[in-house]
Length: 414
Image 1 (tube, rainbow, N blue to C red):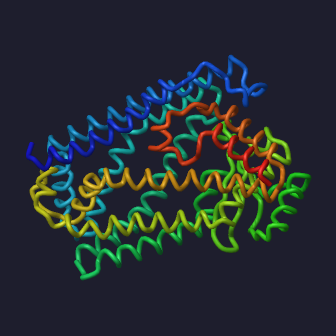
Image 2: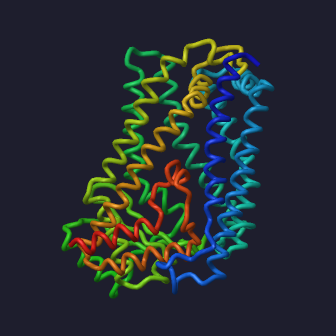
Image 3: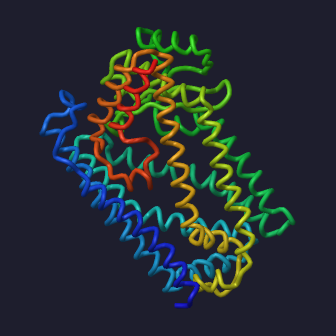
C-alpha cells in the first residue's frame, strides 16, 4: 500500500466513522417518554414499536455500511480496479465503449452485492414492522426496470463526459457541466410522464370534497398545475407521503393512496399547501441551482486530478485511462461531498420551516397541519427524538417536534 492509497482509505474510513457515530448517538438519544404533543396519537405499545424500528434499521445500516467498507478496501488493495480495467481494454474498443464496460461492470457488481441487503430490509425489517406490501415478483421487476433506466441514463451521461474529457478541450469542465444540466432538466421534464409510471400507477384524483378543496386553494394561490394524481404507494409499502414533480405547465401534485386513506380533507389540503409553498417560495429552483453548483465545483476540480499518475497509483491501476480517473476522483471527493450534503441539508430544513409557515398563513388551519405531521410520524414510526448531530449530518427535514413548535409560533403571531 502506497501513501496515496492510505490517504484514500483515510477519507473513506473517516466518512464511515462520522456517519456511524451519528447513528450510535441517535440510538442513545432515544427516550421512553412520549411527548405531550403526541398524547392520544402514540400509545405505549406503538411508541415502543417505533423505537424498535429505529434500532433495527440503525443496526442493519451499520452492518451494511461496514460490509461495503470492507469490500471496497479489499477490492482496492487486491487490484480489483486494475483487473476490471484490463478486461475492459481487452475488448479492443474505443475509449467511450471501454469506459462504459469499465463503469458498467463496477455498477452491476455493486448492484448485485446490494440485492441480499435490499431483500433483508424489505422482507424482514419492513415486513416485521407492518410496512411491506411488496412481493418477490414486484421486487425483481422493480430491480430490472431500475437497472434499465440507470443504464440508459447513466450510459448517455457518462459517454458524454468521457468524450469531453478524452478530447481535453480547454474548457472541458464547463462543457461537461452544461451537458449535465441539459440532461438533468430533460430528465426532470420527462420523469412524471415517462419514468415514474414505469414503477407506479398514477390516476387523476377523483371528483369529490378533497379535489374541490385542493383546487380551490390552488386557484386562490394562483398555482397552475397539470393535475392532481393519486399514486398506488400501497402496492409496495404502507408508509405515506406526498410530493410535487415536474416543471413548467407540466407541474403535478401526487398523493400516496395510503396518505389519502389516513387523513382528513383539511389535513391533506394543508400538506398540499406545504408542497405548493416550496414552489411559491422558490425552494425548488434554489435546490436545483445548489445541485448544479455542487456539480460545477466537482467538474471544475476534476481536471486538476484526472491526469495525475498518483491518483491511479492509489488504486493500483497500471495505466491512466480517463474512465478510471473519473471513478477514482469520486473517492477523493467524498469528504467534500459530505460537507456539501451537510450544507444542503441545512438549507433544506430551513425551507421546510418556511413551507410550513406558508401553508399555515395561506390555508389558515395550523391545527390541521400539526395533526397531519403527527399522523405521518406515527404511521411511519418516525423517531421523535433524533440526536442533534444526526439531524445536522443527514436530516433534510427538521424533527417533527421542532416543526410543531414553529407552526404554533407562526399561528400565534398572525
